[in-house]
Length: 480
Image (cartoon, rainbow, N blue to C red; front, side, top):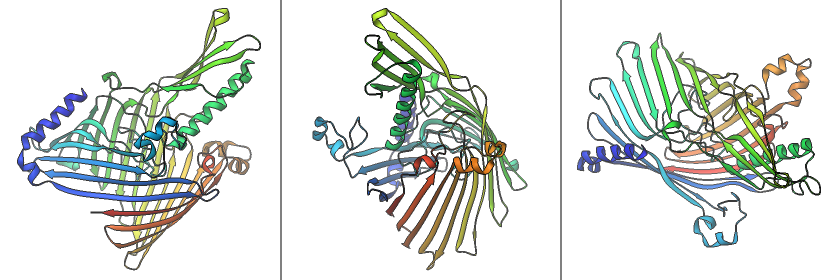
């Protein structure tokens, strides 16, 4: 199926022939960024990123686009350790000593008024927006998360897809259908992988304690990830209907996919009963599951400010972790199942408003129930609550910009109201983030940005678990 889609793209480009090559527009972007931990001086992030965009409006109907992106990391990175800890053989591998990436971000063609006026389709690797909210889009699940940089909230990985949109004249209404032959998985950054490993070690220690088992080094021997893979059974389908009524942009949608974040699917322990029930081997398997989403979004520009809201209902089958214990010396094997994700539906939602006032002051405020990767109404990954505020003041004819970001996080606002001591609950379950930044933009294509970010809170909140990452940052960007 993947080769079929790519063949279609190549065929259309070839049909376009010399016209496509002759009128191709080329644009580029590049940036260099560094973040340094305030506590110990560790360089948390140090990359050079860039992209080249090739696109062309071949004729009145046909449009083609190709985006190639690249990234260079300024410090060694082991291919298995995901850190600066290398294996000796990796000293002879250039992409371990000087890590770099290059790939195709997008590659698709779009045909307007296909078969009849108003029917448009696009095919290829593309980013399909799904929802109207600003960055925090609970309904936007057709493309998997790209968390290479954990602070680029809402960044997604374009997917191989067929996108069909039928536009009607009345009320700017439309019908949309999206098909992806298989589900993609989220890309995680090293800190998330380490956090996931730390949670796994803690769970393993609990299993040992509960089962009366022993282990000299209570950590996992190995862990594997069973990705959904390129199989049509792991398809993604999305349908949407929308219209504009009295200035309100409205849409309803349905989508189904394999959730892009992994969960602990299986745990296997091999035990030596002599002398004292010691675990001689342990392995863990991560997996993915299918979910369904039904959503609604609305946006309206009131003039004094732009508003938006989204709500998404998720439902799925119950997901369990299978714990298999084997004692080869006694020819015994037992398997126990524990629920890790309830079949109970859960709801993510967001609402916000933004505006630029007096020509120099910008603000954006929004409330979100459910962050990226959170799921369910209970357990370690359950939905949390967030209040986000971003303000900017422009001076020197918009060349100098002062920005302030505030992010408040509470483990669960509903639990706070239900608790007998709401203020004590907030004290025990809060997280906060503050960032102050200055951007100097002497001309539109160049910018220099410097900032400081401070994080605090309790480990029970998402932000609180990141409190050791106070940082200073600097970034240079250029477009051409």
